[in-house]
Image 1 (tube, rainbow, N blue to C red):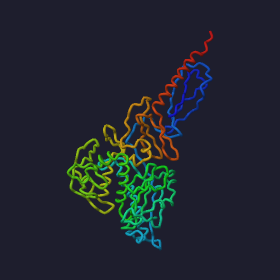
Image 2: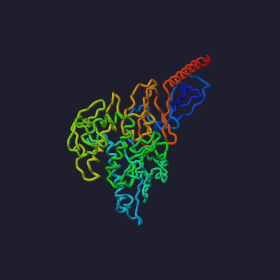
Image 3: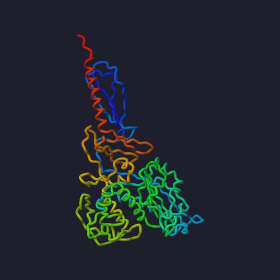
Image 4: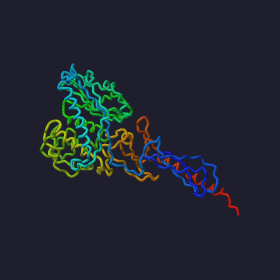
Length: 471
């Protein structure tokens, strides 16, 4: 927080050094209209006002300081799509000798991938509509846009591997990204995710459902080799199998959500929301279940069980069991029409829609929960502050400022946070990374006290030195 000393003189006879007050520009930027050193006081000065201006650093965009922490946040996720289609010698068909189980014409597989990409974008966004199963007009927290698409008519680069005994080769992700300037996409073109469409086969290729490159490590559903190019900003890589339906792609994506949310708060997410201590135990009321375990499942992957079990997911309360109701596959869909329209897909959308999302009013130990899609929508912003699944507690600020500032960067809204020991954080951008700049309350108090003394001294001096009126 920067401070400027601004003096306001009498309207009738203002001193020539008085600068105009800085005014707020677009998106909260302050425009400084200039200031000069104190001195050269001439004329009649009736009063001096001390004005402290919290100025953004390096032109960082900030919104009104009156904005409270909010759950009404949403994000637009930029996606780079990479398609691997190993073709036969004539270039017209997919080489099943490479994929192991996918053949057919190149045109048909390309069309299938385009259709599945659109379906994944649609269903993931649908899953971020908080309680959308009962309120179809609920706004989504995430939307997706394809920034660029690249097609490779070769086999996925691979290396020998002993990590999975069923697959002697695994995908070579470092080699894949040698062909792509991923950091340019991440830092300058708004890419946060890479969707790779490839194959797996019975024993052909070991792929990672998700991987993360981040200043905070490889937090993902993978071997966590942390072998992706580092760009100084988080991005996530998914590998989807076009030999299966898009429901499996949503399944892979949901595992990444589990990895991130449990990393931030394993107790609140895994134990209290998912009910990890109750999976498969139908003698106990369930919570909301996990990617593998619906609340009524007797075993993992049992998405089509028509037998109901009590669960409080429709009234989930982290402080204790909410009102329970009977939950079964009838709650989402028991009908299997294939891998693009089956109980698994509908359950995963139902499960995501129960996460505390946009506009939720759930609290934990008296503190409101944040929009949990903040974690996925802007992982770096969350980690640079105190990562948690609750909003910052609102406490009176002795300086009269808001306890937090909401800011917008690259189209992503995220709530700012301030701890009890700090004044509101003003964010600046360096090489595409948000870095918080904090001033402690003690420092602010010292500066304010010192400036107050200066102001009083100047006021007394102006009164003593005021020229007498000639009679």
